Length: 209
Image (tube, rainbow, N blue to C red):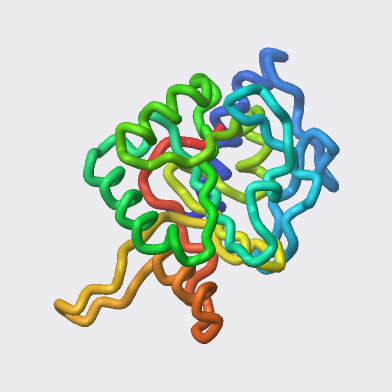
């Protein structure tokens, strides 16, 4: 399912609630201050994008990134991904790139959960990443993330360079090239190849909210 189609489904789901006065009507024209527009690929991430950590401390998302690092913002919940093999793939991804001047931060993509639930799932998977809240869907909307699990990659200049699924590493058998975040992060680290597909269609997962 492509991103425009998924957005249309979300709109349809919200319509009954709007009709009953449970949700505010959507306005035409430019987004309001409570309805951020997703930033465009290769545009800078707002320096004032605030997140809330596990201790309830509010800080900027970019504070998790050192000046010479790439920041991988991973949208997850304790329920998504649901398969153990997906958590294994995330651990493999981190093992591959975690020592290459790449910082990782996990965003709790399910508003029904507290960050502690995701932190527990990460520890179980062998991933000790800092966890922050999605703040009512604000972070995912700014970065244009619609489902979990998905990854946003922010380069050393603090520009958004990729958003989408994890994808898969390169495989010698069948000469299959790397895809998704695997290819994007390799390109950003190497500064040689371009990001082949900076905004692929979302994969299967749970709605980020």
